[in-house]
Picture 1 (cartoon, rainbow, N blue to C red):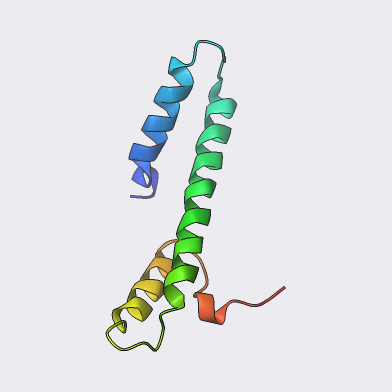
Picture 2 (picture 1 turned 90 degrees about the vertical axis):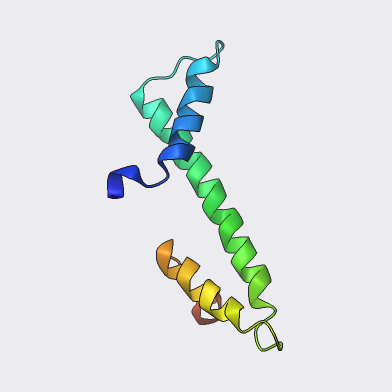
Length: 86
């Protein structure tokens, strides 16, 4: 299953790279492009989790805590409220 994670995103990125007539991509370039895009999506997801965590403790938003912990564990992130400040 690890080989199919984010497969759709990778296919879209590789398709865009190979369709670009100005750029010439080799395997390492395609891997770098995929990694950059996945990191961008991970940062966006992290920002979303931080935004949703502001609603913790508010009535009718108890489900956010469960979603926050699920997303954090699924994407190898620490839950927002347990994250160390640098």
